[in-house]
Each structure stands twice: as C-alpha cells, then as structure tokens.
Length: 317
Image (cartoon, rainbow, N blue to C red; front, side, top):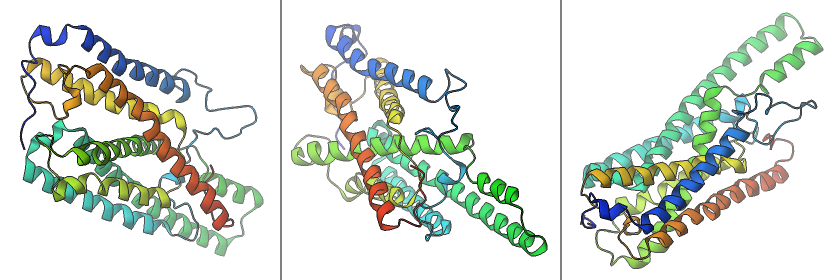
C-alpha cells in the first residue's frame, strides 16, 4: 500500500491558515450541536426528561427486553443470539485477516474504526442476547412452577408483564447508542467507497482486493440482517453520536499529523489541497443522508412487518 504523503504537516504554516480555520468550523460545529442534543434529549440536562404526567412513552425510551428480543414473537431470541455470534465471528475473522495482510496502518482509516465498532456491536449484542435467553429461561421455569402451585392474581400478572416493560439499564442504552452510531458510519464508509473510490481506482494507495471489498460490504450486510431481526428503535436525535464518532476520528488525524510527518489515509483530509474546506463540508453534510437512509430502512421495517405479522410484531415503536 503506497502512502499518501502531504508535505511537512508538522510545520506551523501547514496549520495556521484560513483553510484550516474553515475545516475546524465544519468539524467542530456539528460536534457542538451533537453535544447539545445529547444533553437535551438523553436527560442529562433535565432529570424529568424521561417522565410525563401521562406516563406515555417517549420516542427515545428503551425497554430492557428490546436489546435481545426479535421483533416478531414467532422468532425465538436464541436465533437472534446465533445470528449475532456468527456475525461477530465473521467480522472478527475479516478484521484479523485484514490487519495481518495490511498491517496495523489500517487503523488510520475510518473504515477500520467502523469495522471495529461493528465487531464490538455484535460481541456486545451476543452477550446481551445470551443474558436475555438465560433470563427468559429462568423466568419461564419460575412461572411454570408458580402456575402449578398457585394461580397468579390479576395484580401479579400485571407485575410480571411490567417486568418486561421496565426502562432499560445503562448497558441497554449503550447498546442502542452503538447500534445507531455504527448504522450511520457503515452507510457513510460504504457509500464513499463504492461511489468515490471504486470508480476512481487510479488514485494511488488504494487497491480493490478481496479483503478491502469485504470490509466495505460485510459490515453493512450483517448490520441490516440484525436490524431486520432486532426490536431496537431508531430515534433521530442520536445522529449526534454518529457526528461525534466522525469528529473524533478527524481530530485524531489532525493531532497525529501535527506531531508526526506521516501520510493521510484519505486524500480529501489533506489540508494542503486547494479545495480542502469544500471537501470537509461535503463529508460533513453527507452525514445527514447517510443517517437518513438507515432511519428510513428501520421505518420501512416497522411499517412492513407490523402489517405482515400484525398479531406477533412486538416492536413498541
């Protein structure tokens, strides 16, 4: 893999100019807006943001079982567990093979950051699914024993049902946040790769090998499969985490190049380019359609499956 060098990036003249100032604005402005949305909608700024007098559900509410139950009752949670384990093994194998073949320099790429996060998502999801299957098994055993010994009262039935409608614990929210972050990032990496890099493979330093193609397709395919099965909602405001993820990646590249004269993994990150601010703005704006595409996929899933499986579809939103 050839290196994309860009002069002396450690010199002050490379950074102290109007182009870098504009790029900072394009990167930090979305990060500031994202931080505000998280503060507002995740309840960090208002301890009562999750509660209303009517006790109605908010769009961004998450319930404990949504992290591990399939969206259709006819599908046992163990099948979602199996899918997540297989997906994790495939992604981990692809990541290891890619690193062994191309070296640790791959972690300079946004694609590898995304692939690593998707792999973590399936590992995390496998643990939550395993926990859910175990809990369901134990709850079922206890329920059968209670039904045999003494019929449940109406209040006890209500209590048991509400057990599955409790607000999710910390790890459930973390899982949903990771899901929505990798959803946008996977769309962004794959769209940029297949619409920009593949048509212009004459760019030096990029190759269309099997592992490269796999890294830009397997992640999204498996993520769409999990989306079709899971019960997770997809509130719009969590585009904030997607914006922060990309922003931290760009800041990492800037800090690295400020202290080390190294190569740029993507040519449009090079601040010495004449139209660098325009490229940064375009990439920033791409986050909106990329996240919207996955948002519409989730909405289409809810719309379709709720009509095909009217009696057994169990997504709350």
